[in-house]
Structures are given as C-alpha cells and as structure tokens.
Length: 156
Image 1 (cartoon, rainbow, N blue to C red):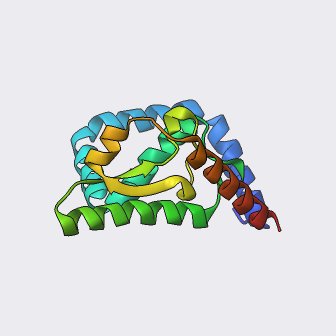
Image 2 (cartoon, helix red, strand yellow; image 1 turned 60 degrees about the vertical axis):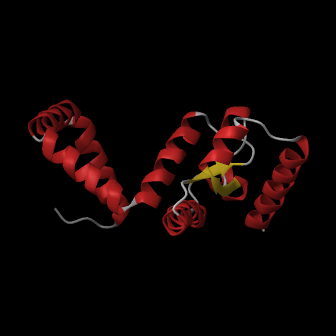
C-alpha cells in the first residue's frame, strides 16, 4: 500500500494495531515465553555494553513513576544525553579510581527533588549512602532557581 505521507502511514499502523491488539499481544507473550533465556542473556549483554544508558533509563523510570521529571524536559533529547553522559562519567570515575561511585540527586527524589541533570552529582557510594535523603534548604532553593532559569532559557 502506498502512503501519501508519514502521518497517513502512522494512522494506518495505529488502526491496524488497535484492530489486532489481542492477537498481537498473544503472539508477543508466546515469543517471550519461548525465548526467555535468550532474551535474558541479550538483555544482560546490552546492559553490560551500555552501562551509562541502562542506569539513566532505570533512574528515568523511577522519576517518571514518581512524576518528578520537569514537564519542559520530558522529551528533550539534549537533557536525555546529559543524563546518559552523567552516568557514563560515574562509570569512568569508578573504573579509574577503583572506588565505587554513584550518581546522586542533590535534592533526593524521595524528598520531591526533580530528575534533572542540574540536580545530579557524582560522589562516592559511601558518601551517597551515608547522606540518605537529607538536603539543606539552600541547596533546594538553588536547584529551584537554576531549574526556573533553565526553563526560561528553553522557552525563549
């Protein structure tokens, strides 16, 4: 079938998927059950080869679940790259120093802090685990001001 434009193809595919959703999901389930071991091995290999991206995706999942990603950054490719680079930096520092490092939210997600590259820092695992979910008010206000100025720059 020839399509006039990309939107027409997307609409057709979406309608086809909705009409055949039950059958498609059943096939996917059978495939996952049949290939469970192979999928697990490949997923593990991908995570090992893409540690920074895997860690960023995991943190992003938690932040989305808690609804802590600022609205103006949810679909921002530059922000996604900054997050991935931060997690890659953590891996590089840990490997170079031989000391385990974590990517820490200065204003913790547990306390309502945003999942944003301006709220992240790379610190040793010991420091991160000992700080728990504590944050001073000055840090909170600095992060809020930085996020607001970053937001206003993006809307100009």
